[in-house]
View: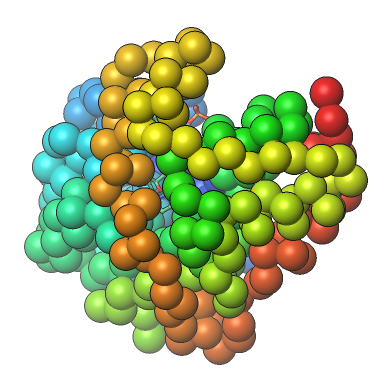
Length: 274
Ligand SMILES: NC(=O)c1ccc[n+]([C@@H]2O[C@H](COP(=O)([O-])OP(=O)(O)OC[C@H]3O[C@@H](n4cnc5c(N)ncnc54)[C@H](OP(=O)(O)O)[C@@H]3O)[C@@H](O)[C@H]2O)c1
């Protein structure tokens, strides 16, 4: 059995994909800058050693497929992977982003057997990423109108779809656009987290400029602030406010609901108030 390289294998979806593959007895190599051998998107020299003996790759680009140069890097990696014998590539992509579409195109052009998992906004951004501290502190500020609808998806569902595509027949050439089963306004999502966490959390809809200032105040590096504000300026206009059937199509089961995610995350104590 060949090894599966999981890029971002310690991240929100990569960690879950690696765990599921290992549980199935699939040999896994984690692809991150601190892994051995290391894999770094910014250091092309690291790519070939990470691909040694690899038959399939779960491709997650860091920090985001929307950043300039992302599609070119993903394309160069996909070509190298295919040339080195990695037949199957499963790409984690985002909805409604020009850069993500270019990244998808680059993987499709690589000559490998590809599957695209085009994901909605992950619920785990509230518990494993940039919303965790605001949730704990009781106020989430974001440049999305209170009622802007988003079908938040559980990273466990993304991982299940990715693992199916990596290990089973019938997923090659598929674009799975994956969302949760319910559209939620941003204020509603935060209210459901507050109910599960058992302490009040306010949602504050702010302008992009106010959001950028808040990030700077919180010592977020300037290039990361620029990246985030550009991505959010592009996608937070209602274009993603619809449900899709990607999870059902890939797994023959419905996606998990946001309330179930919130209950499970709260039970770990991750959102206990500071
Ligand atoms: N978050 C969402 O809601 C969402 C939705 C749709 C699509 N996406 C797409 O998903 C992709 C991943 O985003 P994410 O938010 O889910 O992040 P993530 O996978 O949680 O990101 C963290 C992972 O990236 C690794 N990493 C950090 N710097 C790296 C580098 N220079 N080279 C290689 N790996 C590096 C980290 O390794 P360490 O542990 O060593 O730091 C960690 O494994 C992005 O391309 C994004 O466009 C995200």
